[in-house]
Image (tube, rainbow, N blue to C red; front, top):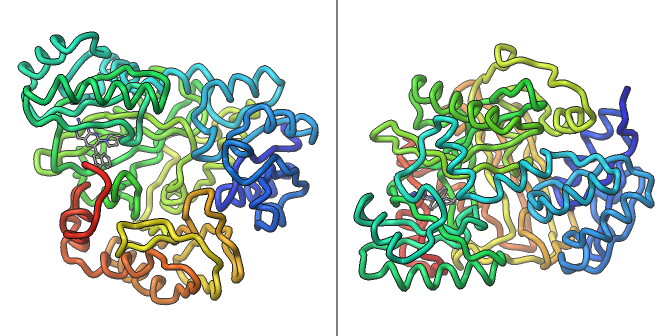
Length: 457
Ligand code: MV4
């Protein structure tokens, strides 16, 4: 007994298109909420119905909770999908949807709230037996307490905002003499940015890789769908994701995925979620850092590796269906690489460069998937992120995937805006990347050394 007959898409761009496609395959009508800047978007063209939800600035449209919920109700939708970014990890929004009688496609609002507190999530991980870095067990209450922790775990330290995440509000402290001032500044920044100045402290590990485990559950049956390696990033913006991670031995993979399932089970997780870890490849050790309670940009990496449709699974679970598969049904096959094609200028610190696309010719052929909302003549609004397309390739092994990505990048023709295509072409020829020998500071230190940066990590 399918309850969801019509679903409201509270997002834009490629993920809106992705959600509409899932709805279409499930026989669910899709209602697209769009801002004035997105009137001519592919999502509006593909949806069964569309509703303008306000002006171009996100605050007046994609972040306007009341307008979105009212529009969803007025359209007759039974459910709402938040996509990624915007309101996708806002516990208040999920709760208001539930109160308004809309099925929220995502975890319970209580779980979003729990994991949104990154200090609490760290503690839950510890309870579930998941390794965490040395540091404060709770948010710190005084500079003296922080100094004690510093003496115990040693420097460098990383001061993190409990309400932050994704690298926002993080600060490296190299010695005790800097600690007081760093705490003051970090607390002030966190208060201003998140309305919550709570901080916690961890030993800063470097160099590390960034590996995340995809989980999906119905609250009772909770499984993992393997990992993705997102080490190639710059200023916490991911540029390339791949799976399986070239840095994990089979034994380490077994442990990290088992730990993710243990933590997801500990909170009775429902929907798709991702557990982020940092991995010390040399020592073959891993540490949980945070959990994302949304569908992620890079979810198609996992879809291509497993043959599963994560967005359809999310919708079915939200509709009350039990998860249709068990862990032993999941097979990760081959190797997948995703390159984010952004309208950015890598020569200018990856500065966003919105504009109008002239030519837009996307690659295709064996093993290629493109998730995009772009087309020739598309005007990229300056109000949102600069993603033009996600280019994914599958290969029977990493070598084939690399060759295929190189071939596909060569076919990709975009004019009118600078893009990250040339960056990816360069990366794919770097021996360190080919050999899988990279860390999270690789792009900054090895590939764009000497270019302007605006960030400390
Ligand atoms: C760390 C770390 C090193 N040591 N925590 C960045 C994003 C946020 N989710 C947590 N992050 C990090 N936490 C400790 N104790 C290094 C990072 C980090 C990072 C992590 C994943 C992907 C990219 C990164 C880039 C810089 C720093």
